[in-house]
Image (tube, rainbow, N blue to C red; front, side, top):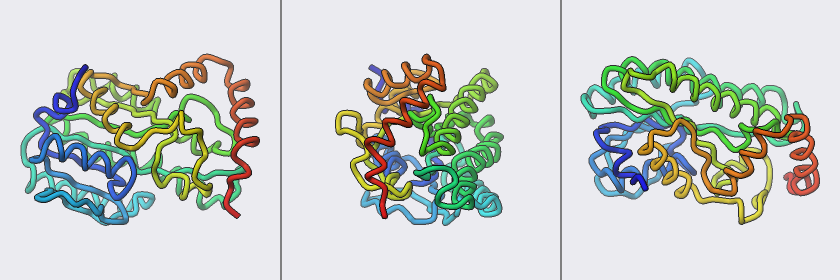
Length: 272
């Protein structure tokens, strides 16, 4: 089985969004474990609280849903690469994202549009800004999508659509970049122990424990997929099965099943 160490060979820098918690934080912690010499640049509102001696981490405070702040963040990333890691491959991890739970447009259209900006526009903007350097030095663009990307999900309608977008975009981009020294990987986790539920507006315990993974498990699966040269990875074998079923059945049927399941098991979990 490919190892995380093999995935990180010849990388000198990792640029990550949303490294202050959840999957993003686990990416920093585990990569630093396997590659203590790696330089990290995190873009998010909060600075990661990571207790790793001699961690080479630069934090750029940035609201990624604001395109002007992203542009300023890209300037900071360029300085980081020039000073902290002027040579070597670059790992870009598009991790930041959130969901809005409920019937559209509950929660307000402004929140829905903020989600689209963060989940979609920021991913494209950051990737476009870093691609020239990545083509010159080599690298991988990892984008965290979701199991929800494989089907329309009622009560998470806009969220599942944003994740479907980045999944298809990432796979298509991987083909466009063939021969350039840059690859892409779309990571599709199922329910994961992160702050997603809190931000989405639901209580903990949305999914049965049998389908849940830790953020560390998601990151390890992602690194192994990188080492294998995959363009898509669904983390967890049960999630792989759900993705396979969801992508093969008629979308209207899958949407109805998902909607009934969410209405039955999850609507009672919505926070007052």
